Length: 262
Length: 195
Image (tube, rainbow over all chains, first blue to last red; front, side, top):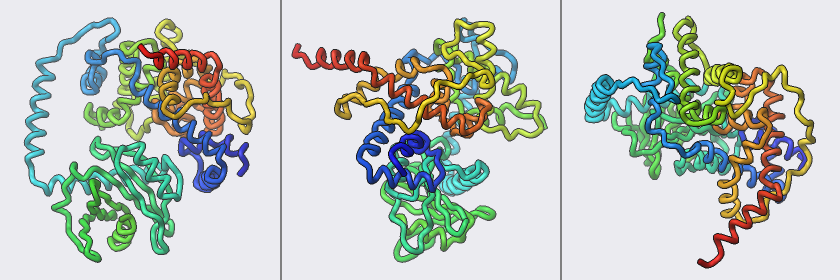
């Protein structure tokens, strides 16, 4: 790939919109061209700063803006209010009651048994994987380089994700995407083996319990396993993260995937 | 089966933050942005509640928002900051050779470059042609893929890719403008001066 072609595709590459072969070719060029590498780094910085600037907004206070629940209640009951004219429909009594119910229910659930928490973890990662499949298996960064994908995932999720270099019998890394599991940041690395996809999800280990999942031991390492219809979830704790391999491949294959990433 | 409020809320929730971020770039202030989000959800609910098949994707809400903005342009144009032209009416923006070198970046170290961007980047974005600004907003603030942006703008993905490349080049040119850099350097000298 020439420098001109790299410039032509650079933004699509940085936005993870290039297909894998072109991505790999462009990355190879950047690895060997200091000028293009510098341009890529500048544009990454520009995009990152732009994202932060647009996330912050214009700095005005938003405390009087309706919440999601309030707004949905308004539109579904046709009681829309034009906030810009500062009209107020006071819902404090109803919302306070609803909020109180939510707090009590939440406290009850949080005090519940660990089995529910780890069953829920397995359910949620499977749900996320199914969503990924239904969305056409699109990744946000397409790369077979674990260092690149790890760096990108760390930047996007603030999770200290570390993917390992491939081995002869390992799954092939396709790319990554950021997502949320139960509204918490999650890093999602996509793998493939003989056309069969699997994901390796990384989440903060403090947020989840695995205790009710089945425990298995391989080569002195403990894994937690759950089965959901045609999907299998294999999880392990590493440092401050839980890594969970999810897919339709069997338990042993997913253990192989997760054990490579040590 | 009739849609429930809970179903609608679950559908909207993942897009809640990005809807607000994008709305803030279409209209004047946060209150107008909130109204725009409300209008979007109201229109969405009407369709959502009536539909048999509720497999809408996230681009759908932004399509609705964009349609609301176009309606507001006709009736309350003072509330709009990003004036939209239907894609079918958009004459081809100045063609650019996308293989040409980029405008040179300001010569400064990384820390100062980030500070410079903090100061300058939103103004630079606002200086772009609306069509350029919009693809960047939908991508960065809306967190939409090119395919989803193409659905929102009702144009081919290739058009989005080309327009995005031109938009980011134009943004780079704004950031590289000598006046902007000179202003930043003057500010640096004032900050470095001992008090």
